Length: 430
Image (cartoon, rainbow, N blue to C red; front, side, top):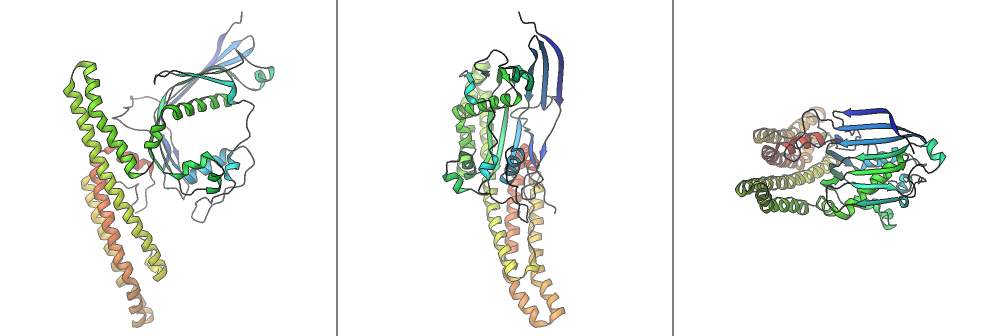
């Protein structure tokens, strides 16, 4: 009979943590942080964002371990340059160094896919048998087939043996922005490169509870958990991945359709719970109206921001080709969100004033400076060159003003969205 007893116990609790993106080419501020949403999952006061507990079990065969881990909902924001850097940093195989342009953006590498792939460990996925219940809240149970304990003395000596590992279920929301596509790698059948075909916004995934039993080594545990989540997402949550594709009609229709379904589901659930159908209907109607308002204002603001971006690109081309002294138009950026409608109107007024001042500076100040240095002929030429810039700068200011007004109205309806965007994007220096 094998005797087992707890010899040591340890626990780690982290109240809050986040990972900040400092790449110059990335607009992301918080790459990993807590997903804050009082309406979806209110956080219990004093709860830890991350908890890990480990017990060391003394047996006749040696020390074995039991591990328990829990996480609060996570928010992940990824830029392709950041993802490339992370994959390079954690790759174990020989890889060529990452190269960056002068502006800090990573250069595409034809052999990047091969560089990212680390040598395969001795533990393979074939030795894992996964049994999962069809019900959503049932855990995924993972065991290492072919053994009820340690496989060999070498396993006992070199890697810890985990009797049980319990990873609690948690939710994750992902945003990803690709910048380039390696078509050669895609043509060769690299599935990883396919994610760069589309941007992803508010991709929500439920990572189910995973319970592992009798697995050698921490790497094997991580691999078993990752494979379990991957299979569950592919089999049961693929529709969420499609809904997260950042194609404006697709994700808007998905959000509106989900809230529209609440008009029926919420009254039914409320009736089953306590019979108050009207309460459920009011809640479903409120959610539907709020979603419609937020999506309409978000879509309109995205259109104005797209127009502003096109005008800014045109302004950059014209300014460089005609007179580099005009400089670039500095927009506020998504990190400087208006708090409410009043703040949006104030920012809109500032944007219009900034566009007009920039046009006046281009038309008056630069020709005047040329007049003082080189005479009237040079001043007339500078004024003629400045006309296109003087016309486009107020247009940029007007589109930015409209965007700020719409964002202020949207943030008044949904303050949580404003807080998430301010946390997600870097703030421009105004």
